[in-house]
Image (cartoon, rainbow, N blue to C red):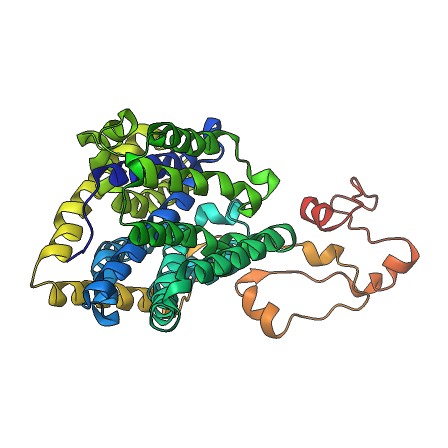
Length: 447
């Protein structure tokens, strides 16, 4: 069980984080920085896990085994269900050539390297390919999971050998990670977005707050200026959603604003203040409780609805997407998350669910796709007619496999020197050309 006191206002902060993420992903342009909600989650996670480790270490009851089991009970059940559902939906919605890609996404989730895989697949988080990647959003979970693996080892080592310097050493690591983030955002923006080293400082900001809170054994929210600082924190987070822009590079320096805002809210908010009362109110804190499920389910719902729209030209209304996400999230929270976290008999059902999801992902990844091209009309590609290669030969190797089932006529041998002499001309309706196209690969496409 957790060794820290439950704070409903922190759940309210989770709601303040997840709603903008969903609205941003739904395409609402007025909340251009909605993706910043993930950074709020990072700070909350760093704060809570640090406080748990510090309190349990002081009580002499901390163990890495129990810590990581709690993390697995918190993360794995709902995540496994989303991965499994994504595999099933992908089987019916995706083209067969995309199954391998989807299966690889699922396997990377369980290997704790989803951020590396999504970096490879989608590259830029805002690129068009991202909207066809059902498990793209699991990159942030991988960042947290990697942090959970390494940070406890570092913190316990410091507490054992240099306890009096705990805050200074974690602060130094935070500054180092922030410097990496600034450099990477400018020179390697995709890596800065997805990878742990440029992002670790955000989680570490919460860790620093937890260390201060534990050392002081005092309630920052009791300070006279606390209500003002709490309000400034909420304003800072909210303003980030509207003014932070991907065009200026993210995370970089822009992430400072939501991170500091989150630290201020956690440190100085209490239920005696109006900000605390709003965040701790039943509807807001409930959204926070189901925020993990909301985050997990919303993106696959959006992606598959987008793909169905491409296939059928029927756009699923936004309110329907929100309704589907809410239903799935509430069901996931009450039927999967809570039982797994609080039931004594959780090992077998969670193991079965996780193994089934892994097997489904592996099956999609390894499924050998063989199209029966007789199902389709003959496909003829005349691109090689306009190819500038002087002496054309039939394709071999990779291109032969890639273009299987497609007829690609070669240019007439008599025109082997035409490019050097007069340009390549293909008369379709007579000896004189009707259209001449100049340009690069785009011109070739139109040709």
